[in-house]
Image (cartoon, rainbow, N blue to C red; front, side):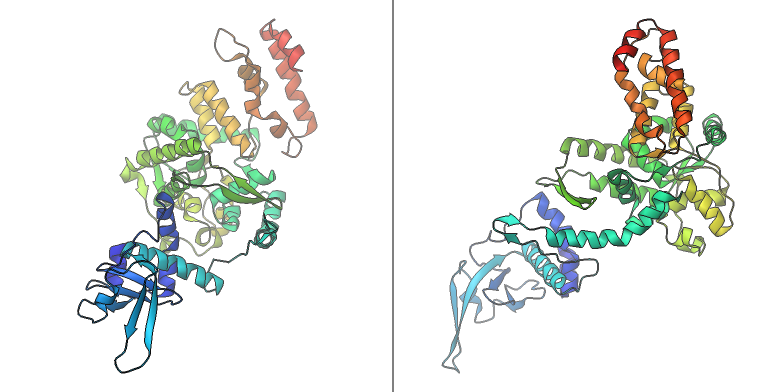
Amino acid sequence: MVNGVKFKKKLSAEDYAGLFLYLNQLENLSKIDLNQLTKVNKNKFVKIKDQDQWFFIGDENELDATKISSKNNKYNLFIGTSLNDRIVIKNKYSSQSKELLVELILPIEKYIYWKSVYHFHLLAKQERLEGVQEVEVPIIDGTIDTSYLIAFHEDLDSQRKPFFELYCKNQLPLAYLAFSEGGLVNAIGRIQSEGKGFINFSTGTNEEYIYQKKIAEEIIENKSPFYLDGTSALFLPEMGLLKKYFEYLPNLKVPQSIINLLIDITEKFRPIPGQGGYMTYIQGKLRINEPDKDKNLELNNKFLESIELLESRDKNITAISLVNKSENLSEQKIPGELCDACILAQMENIPVLTDDFLYLKMNEIDTKKKCPDYFSSLALSRVLYEQNKISFYEYMEFFGYLSSYRFRFMFINSEDLLKSVLGDKKVKSITPKNIHHFNLQLILSESYGVPFRIAFNVIPKYLKSLILSQKTAMLYVQTYT
């Protein structure tokens, strides 16, 4: 970065401000001490108190500072001076002299950092930085006043809330909510934090679930090619399942945008020394969340591992440009990681692994191109379990993970509930707490779209099977119910 600044030499205020976010990340790694140098020596930058102008004392690259080279008669006035020293510059043609007070002495790296911070805040105050808004957080009577900050978030929320409400009331693609919320992770976070809306990965009919499983079975049996889209690319690595499934999917293909998505997600979980908490705005309230460093490190490693796996089959990574996309909204405005897999699958006439099938349907309506065959990460996991490639516990744990993100409609039957408690081995072992993985309070609720009569029938069937399966289960039934 320093070499790039040296090459350009003269940076505008906007150029310096543009470096702020990158340099701020570096500052988090190692706290930058702006007063580290105490004496002026050659090739250093010197700031004078109450002046915006900087001097460069030396013969090398002065960037945008005023250069005082070794041939300048003022050079020796600066060399050797310390912080807060006064430098008197006399003019033999005038009775007046200038007195300068040394405020800062910096090497080039820290000079660039200082300038980036200064211009970022200056331009933000002047409202000259697109996407940046200065918000005052005053301290009143020793207490932080967050009223301006809350007002700022309320304004932001008011812009996005109407579409979120529309999403909650209708079956719309998750990709469209991601466009509205500024990204896939933001959209999923909104659904989860608000406790409203769902990620619709299936129609909810038994016929469609069987269809998804059939596509997954064909993929595994024939080692057929298919594309991975951004939704499944997010959910599978977080549970460490992409690594486990990878050997069964030798012709898994990905758009380059998926690799870029995973890199961005990896950055979110990258451990940063000295990292503090982060602030969120949920349902009209500000919340400060402390980062779970161990959890973040674990997730960072999982996503890095997933990137390495996908890149190990570099011939299966495909790039697509806007030129190859239609002019319709569903392809021009939707983020690449949520539309590229569909477009490429249409071109190659192969299926898509996605947890947002509604985008495929919307794309078909919008572009008049045929909707590709598809299957979800849950359907894939179910097939792998039924083929004894993963355990029932792994399937059940993934089921619980997806339900925590408000996936709909999740397939469940009394046999699965029975296995969650008694296991699927010949030797039975009662583990009542495992039933919580199925999140029955959500997936059997009317708000989920399950009529009461259907939900009411599931539990009696499960209890009957449980009682018939093992006499000792009677104790469990009495205590648990």
